[in-house]
Image (cartoon, rainbow, N blue to C red):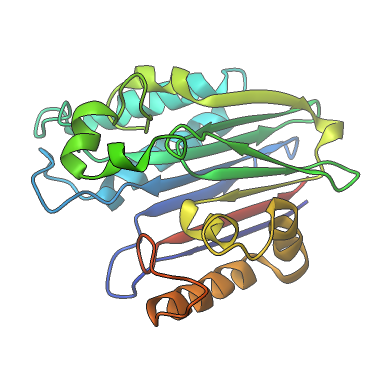
Length: 263
């Protein structure tokens, strides 16, 4: 088995709000990966005393433990329990019902000798490579399908779309959101490799159009996860400089995380 993990902040003078881990049980009979992309809050109040990195560290730590120590529970149940645990850790000091309470996108995968389970919530991505080289992108595309007009301001998003029916969902303080995730189970023999990417790394495909998902996984497999992040940084710098091919769109620089596992 080969595993590789790279996570970099978008700006060196800002904390990385992503979280990533790989868990390999002592039995050697499987493993799991966890990737979270903390949602950067607006400058207005969030109702919480804690930072986004505090939240992703607590949620990610709980998920790493649960996905390894309780292999019999589904990933959605593991996410629900981890959210409940994290929410309880600051419910007495913070307003966890606030729409901007710390939150994150989620990618989980867990493999055993028999099966590969996966879960994706919000706009991070999981790439699944079959033995014949076919790559399938597991995506929760609810946010991408919303009209731009509905996303015009933070106030509109928070009032009408964030963790609401007809909008999109992230892991925040409500354990019930775990049931909204995209989930599935594949036979172990149908999976050769996995790559989990936060949207800061997935912009190689989604923003800059350097290739498709198959090309993206091939780059990670052949050149390494760092090569993907390095190329994204090059493209971000060109975008920020006003290169005609990349008129400015979204954040100039974003936290970027890649976890790769060959099974």
